Length: 351
Image (cartoon, rainbow, N blue to C red; front, side):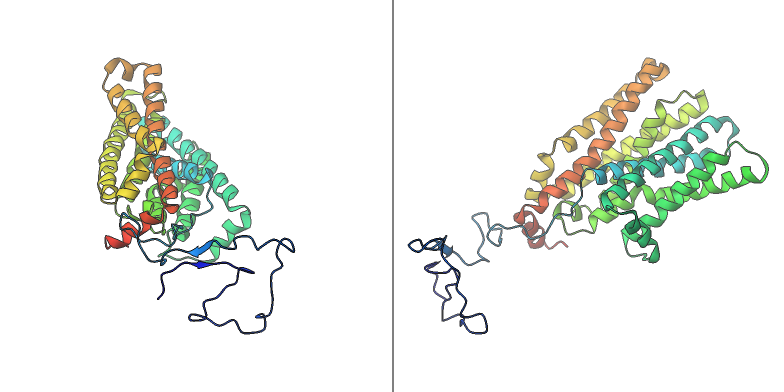
């Protein structure tokens, strides 16, 4: 093969006769130049100056530095839905775990309404991103266990629907009370996968910033969901027993979140281009420090006892967990525009 660059000279369709022949029904067509005495735009410029598979100086092969994968057309509504969906699922799970304790009735009721409100808000965001509500309804025509999106539609509907029934009939007695407890149990059981299915959904995409974490994102998202729910409920005035339950729930979620975040960073650190995308993202960098600040503030007895102190702990905790998820989303989207992020994943023998 002759490595000398080709150059446009006439109508921009110059073909090397050693490689191709200009034949067929459209062979006689010619593009008109911009003027009688003006050449075609690009005439005399190199069509190519290297073989497309040749790598750059860093050894990562690309095709003219063009992206290999296309980023999904998701706007800010999707990471917001990821946060709200996790909050809804973790709140429903806590409500189901405490609904049989009479002393925790206020906690159970608040957690149910929090699960309903955040789940409903997340559903609205999801429908907004889909564009047409009928697209969401069409998802119910198929049940595919191997598809995180298909499973997510059903767990979202079951958890939010169960939280709605439990919230509306939670204060009733008789059959309605039994219905509320059954609905709360269903909401809690489906809230567990709701808290983490979005991580599996991101991990099975082609974007290197997400599929590198197929094994680390699910525990990170689920721990973050628990931390978000526990932080939000920290601001609610409760009796001593339920308050200690919420504090334990929040602290456990935040510690697990920091541990899962460290594991995800180790997985990302093996791929410099992907690691650079995460390090460049401000929400990802800030999220952990907000979480650490929430944990540190909760260690101060005076802050734990005062409403304003608990509100501060709640704001820091919700902000830290939310920023972490937004950071994962943004860093993954950024790697779609970097072809070398894809090739380094392939060269490492990963998916």
